[in-house]
Length: 250
Image 1: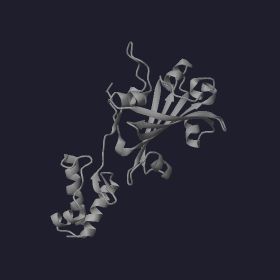
Image 2: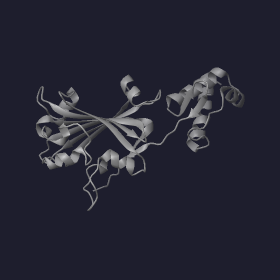
Image 3: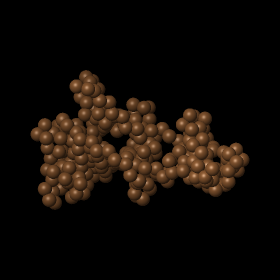
Image 4: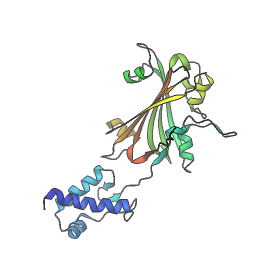
């Protein structure tokens, strides 16, 4: 049997044990010596198998401690809920905070606000003229004290210059509600979702383990005049998020 087939077989059996729950989050993987004996393979074959699982984000190898199944508790995001009208008496809250607290978890975020010439792709999505300015609210967001994702929301400066959106600090009811109050409710959104490996800065800020990709989620919101009024760019580590869309046939 080819060496590649051997290490893939070892990886497949460990992967099955993880997904079946036989090896749960935080459990220690058998040692290299134990895996060598159990599968009658070489140390190099075992290391190739473990390397494959590490690249998939399933295990974490810790020097002098061993190899462990990674903790995986993804945050469930429902993008279609962001613009739903509130039920009577329901308090207005930020969509991310609502998603986290509805799971009984603790939300937090660091916020930076700046007036910028946005990146070209954002300026194009906002249909801005050359060198036109935007207000960006950059957020590093936490769940239970751990960095979970980043969200950079861009708004045309001419629309939000005198509003809370352009000032530092949290907006408890969310920037979308402020846009409504300014006469620019978002009645249509376009979502683009792609995947890639994180940049070194993203990996550092979000404490992303080696081999873990990120999902880049870009949402453009349009007002009743079909003018783009918000571009939100979220970077979501793939092992920490589940995006769920619910669509109804009409």
